[in-house]
Image 1 (cartoon, rainbow, N blue to C red):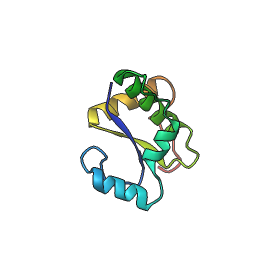
Image 2 (image 1 turned 90 degrees about the vertical axis):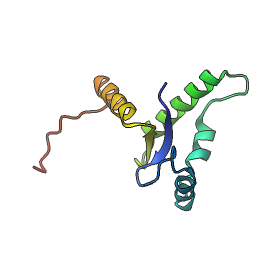
Image 3 (image 1 turned 30 degrees about the vertical axis):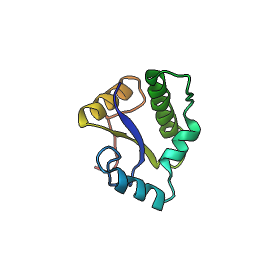
Length: 104
């Protein structure tokens, strides 16, 4: 399973490699990603580590998918995982990379 974390689109810090800076930015702006994730993730001490990780991943995706502000996003541990996730979303029809824009 890929390593992902909940973050916001404007947070310039990586929760993987710059935790203190990431957390300070998150709280300074009132996003509180960890608290939101803690409220949404369906975890229990009775779950195995693998089931807990799966529940957290599902909660992260649910938060991002249902965010009306489009502020929350997924932080990936590495670029390969991010590309893989985007390709999977596109194959499911949940993301389109074919843009027919009037901006050109």
